[in-house]
Image (cartoon, rainbow, N blue to C red; front, side, top):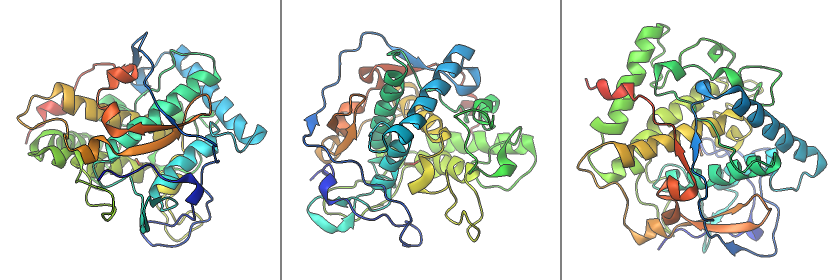
Length: 349
Ligand code: C2O
């Protein structure tokens, strides 16, 4: 059977996934008196998500203003589900055991390390983007993507590196700012050209070379009543995790011992760059599904996947229920990605 949407009334304490330690984080969502089955609104305008390093100054200004208003909600009404901390808490609740699987109180609900990874995060960003657009009264608002699969995007996007911006977060590895090149493979290299080549080779591998079945890319089956974390797909385990660890603090003994913010599930959503990173993770899914020509079947057809459910608050603070199977085509959700070069396609070893 498919994994069911969590029961918010039974939400409990969060724990660190690696150590099992209880976390000093209350991440349960505010209650709602009803749940609405979400219907995708008709798409009137197709919005194009831009690469963060190529976003126009107008797009950046809107993005900053929207995040500023979202942060403001934390102060004016901490229970507003559209607030910055409430949005970050969604990730904690679905990833650090605050929600149990419905009907299985001894099993955590976990949206990573399985085939739920892509659809969960797609829906999460979908509502996050709509909330931001709503907060600035702009239905054309789009989230940029961190184009870390292109050498031109292989640093922290500069718009996140300005300490006066609402997009800034101080809980990041101070060594990985400015012109530092991302290290998707944990190579430890400090040679920029070597890092770029490693990154491109590894993206080629997770997109093409090491993918011979649908689940190799999408992640292993995760159904009701089965253990969480059966195994993530190549992209989730590869570049996705690489960026989290590269941005998050590395000190596991000091005050940030849980690799906050980006390096731990419960805190990752507190860094605005999380959503821009996940916009590219989501884009890699669209490229794999729509652009790459391979013999592998692109969509998982199992009803246990298609009918898996999640709950989110929409931009009107309504609690809505969505299905994995309703998000497989991003264009039906009203957005697509700027189609730009894929330099890793030439990095077959
Ligand atoms: Cu839900 Cu990048 O993690």
